[in-house]
Image 1 (cartoon, one colour):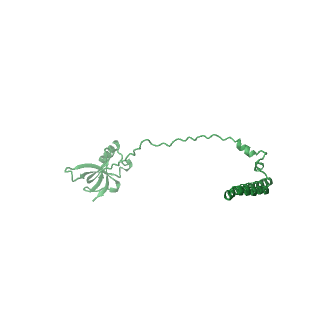
Image 2 (image 1 turned 45 degrees about the vertical axis):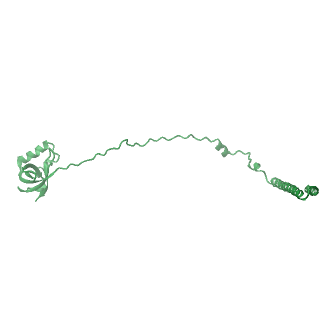
Image 3 (image 1 turned 180 degrees about the vertical axis):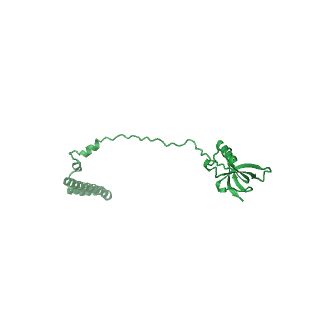
Length: 201
């Protein structure tokens, strides 16, 4: 078949070269030769592909499997449980800034007192009983009253020209100081007793 085409091509090229002239005949001859060669190569490649396909099984025959796969069927028929949103309460935040109360500690004033004399007997007991009746918070226990001293004295204040007399307690550590001794006394609130805190020279 290919030899017949080639003979026809040669005879045609000779006829054209005689009729039309050399240049145009050569171009037509080249075009016909290229077309014939392409067809010949395409036919050869197609024949080789058919031979190779005949030797190997088709892809569809390899993928086709009539046996049912239980895992595949279970996956296809599987039902998914519906998702439910988990509701959680929001944390409680204070709507307004909480005010922190400021605690102001009030301290009683300390003054210098000159001791005049010590009360004894009924006078001393009367001071303790009066403080107890007024609900004094700094009153020692009744069993310790004997160890504490009750004194009278004058507040030493350079700002005041008049003498201010007060009654105050002397803790057991003070002992029995003599008249004219100086002590630093804490002035109490209403209803409490004045108490000497430090000895002074």
